[in-house]
Length: 264
Length: 321
Image 1: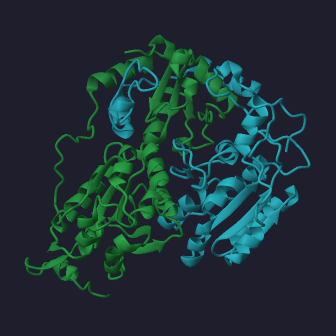
Image 2: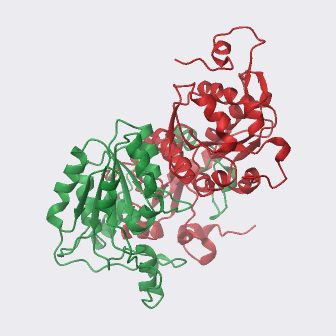
Image 3: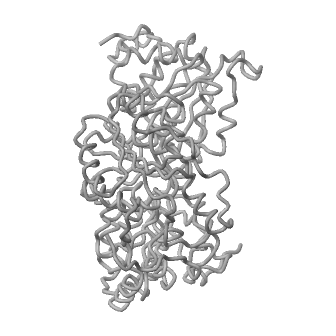
């Protein structure tokens, strides 16, 4: 079902194409859909979920991005607008953040533009001043558009910036790890600025977080700060996003992490 | 409130129809008619006449950015957060080319954005003038539509159409390129078109009842359906309807990345995102499903490409024309 007829059969041939806006189509469709329980099918889905439990974060001394994102979504009770960049942090945000309202995960999906997280969040906050807006950035993407911290300052746009700083182009690094014989060519950022000092240079409070027990307090401190704030989460570098279905492969080739013995 | 020097204020109040205002003021009056409250931009030589007029329109808040990419991405973020059309502006040449990535992103994700660029004066077009670039040409494949407005008298119509095209049907970015002298030197009456008449542009209205009936039949017969909820659910504000469909027939939902906030994360029928980095059970459920109900979803991920022998539910109707 798509409002754009050119989408029909573009990537997948539809058994039953329906052209129309989703809302219009569903309104017409709903009276014709019979009530059902799909008991066996939902049981099967539950079994799959038990065999492959989502949302697990393994216990470790290091600071995992997943841990930070779960703390962030707990602090905002899933009611914040989350604007992400592109890469590992984007996928973890999609996996570990909760959403309770429409249009609250804002992300560059199709084009996948790193750097979207800074200006995209500024625009979202301008449109929805009533909402808490978190910009979820990697250290790579953040450096593409961080000059617009000045725009946040100048206009007092109250966006909280969380940098997931692993000193690498994380997703590319992950592909090098898995598919390019761990040849980490041109993905390690050894010349990153001090993001706390950078924030302070713009007159924005900057907080650095390196340990798990600092996470909740830093998030709270940022949310209580009037106006923009920056948190530099120095996270574990060697952390890959799983599950992963390699590009062009089927679900049979899915790579998963073993279920951890102890979880956060 | 300052009164625009060209008299746009008087025209708005319905003063005599002999009142002519500059092209730049027509742009501002048009934005007011569209209810624009905020726009993002960065000025430069060719677009400066528009900025000269904007300072007289305090109801349109201009947010000055540090790089034009931020202007278009902020307009995009504004549009995604509000469902309204985002507006940005930049000057000719490098200002315009710096917009390209953001425009392409808005196109790929179906985001309504109106982009207004200054262009070199008409007489200089095509002469490699300073800061000249053919921005309508460059952005042709990444805009839903674009205008090069060569007369001040055509600006209002172009902007009216641009907003209409940006927000209707499958939304997308529309670019309006206006030469400097059309903004500055030309004067025209501000006439706001009450209606848009675009032959050949007819966004779908009511869906074909036969297509609906066929879809309903498949849903009612299905033993293992999955709703594949995409961005179109959010764009068309079908949040409630999606929940009603899922709950009425007890169908698990696998949102796409852009569709994630179309269905509450904590809902018992929400399996979470599927695909390359989606939750395993969600991808596996799609693999075992006998029916995928794709709602406003470009099915872009190669994971679901039938020509690679993937996604068994799709195999019943192999691709090929």
